[in-house]
Image (cartoon, rainbow, N blue to C red):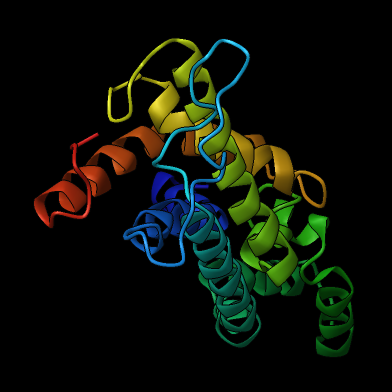
Length: 226
């Protein structure tokens, strides 16, 4: 699998988590009908559990948005992804290879249909054998990725409060990867993606996180560019 395909599949797989994490900032703005998730309470060390930045409306809005992205992906995967995959040069090459083995047309069609979209098919066309679930998302995975992302973000905020880092203070590494770790952990309940996708997500996410936060800061949606 070439690098561009890997990056596209990684982005497609993790998109609900990105959407939830990014849109939670927008949904969490303002005080009307909003409240901090920790209800203003302190932990046993006397510091806030999460802080004012983690709100009920932000969490619920982010999870809802990410889940809707997962639903849209499921529809797109069935109606766009599969037809594109079946008409790809990899599938055509597989059909030509079957013909080259001397199979007649009927036998060729039967063979292709038997292995189509199975781990054998993906291995033959050069993809990780268990890539199907990443190509064809579901609303369940969308919810788990979104809920996991914002839960991971909460864990990151909890750790930052314990380290006595005030809201907005950078925590390199933690700020960029807490939500992605949570998303992967929760979504693994139903699907563990290929190692290549996990490694790509861990490497690329900090760069995307920096770019989106810088854009959010420029648009006055965030108070700090990290």
